[in-house]
Amino acid sequence: MSTFTILLGGDLIRTPLLDRQIEGTRVIAADAGIGHARMLGVMPELWVGDFDSVPADLPDDLAAVPRQVFPPEKDQTDGELAISAALERGATSLVLAGAFGGKRADHAFLHLALAVRLAESGMDVLLTSGAQEGIPLLPGKAGFGYADGTLFSVLGFSDLAGLSVTGAKWPLDHVEVAFGSSLTISNEVKGRLEIALGRGRALLLAHPYPLPES
Figure 1 (cartoon, one colour):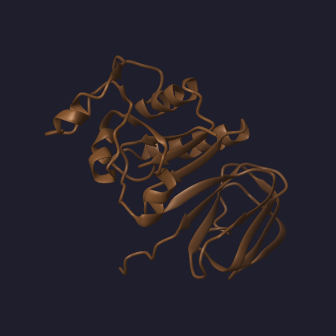
Figure 2 (tube, one colour; figure 1 turned 60 degrees about the horizontal axis):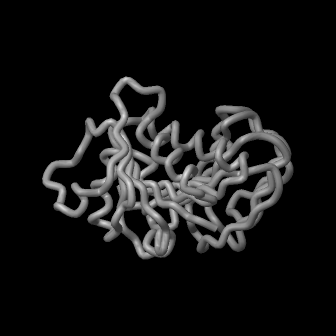
């Protein structure tokens, strides 16, 4: 497998888990995402975008990363262009780092939806901010090794049918979930989390690290 980390412009914190997830991967930065490279201690092989959001005071080695420049009037976001570049280089697995938060909610939504579409095409995709991570759910059954108490939600991108959740504080048994329902929001891991989906498009959003107290 060839795993690429795509540095996106959303929020990102460095954690031991994130370090393990990106260790040994090839790296491509999407415009402002280059700013995460120094924090993570990685060197992108390519920097993609229209370069309208370049961070100030980049160190010389990052400023010298080879660029693939696109005009501002384009049909794809910088993030999607960076993902396309990774696919052209043989990516079979993607870590989308900085996929959540930031100033552009529309870009964050795109990353979620695009991850689901890529997973449907056979690509392994992980979205992460360091503090939370997303994994597309395909029809079938999948298990996850999260610790007890981990907060998670199942985000539906369509009506869901045959959804079962075990190893959770609030289990579900072969239920139907209408698109836009909050039924699958804010659950907690209790044991070995397993999710089965009969039909629909969904994404698991988990918080492997405790949320700060409000």
